[in-house]
Image (cartoon, rainbow, N blue to C red; front, side):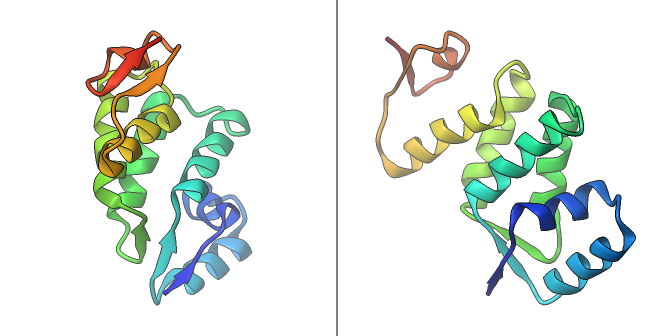
Length: 126
């Protein structure tokens, strides 16, 4: 399966350049894999460059998870991280994903100095 870079996901979500949107859609039409790193970088761009807040970020993750042509790395882990984000929008998605990746790998507790993150099951405030 082919993989996509951050800029491809940005075109698919923002849809601000019709030529690049068409090229991105054509590329993913046969299926494409999205790594955690590309997903997190995409969400960073949506937040930092496009000014999207937690609700829009959560919606973007959900859309990407449900996209018919995309396969998200460990989609179950991403879905669990999304649930945390929806319950606690003050958390960043990347923090939620870090916790869920550690959980799947069997490496809990996750030590953190982040007070909000430490409130989630599996995290431990240091």
